[in-house]
Length: 92
Image 1 (spheres, rainbow, N blue to C red):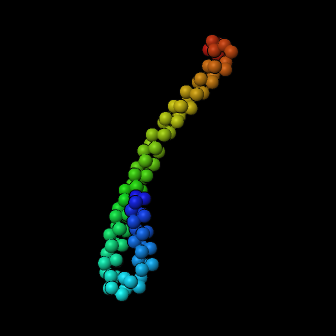
Image 2 (image 1 turned 60 degrees about the vertical axis):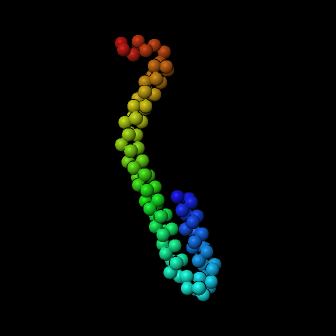
């Protein structure tokens, strides 16, 4: 995605800096098509990245609470067992 971003920005900057040359040789159509193609490729990759981020967010939302709750219970039980002087006294 970074490569596409660099390419798109390069074409954009090239068109702006060489505006007079492009205009003189009637290259507006060519440069416009070149920029549209680069921008479409960048946007296609951007949609894929955004989709993957949303997928990861949904997956973490679905799996994280049960795991974190189990981990919290485990740590709580370890603290009770380790810090209690006589665990047998708790049962009485």
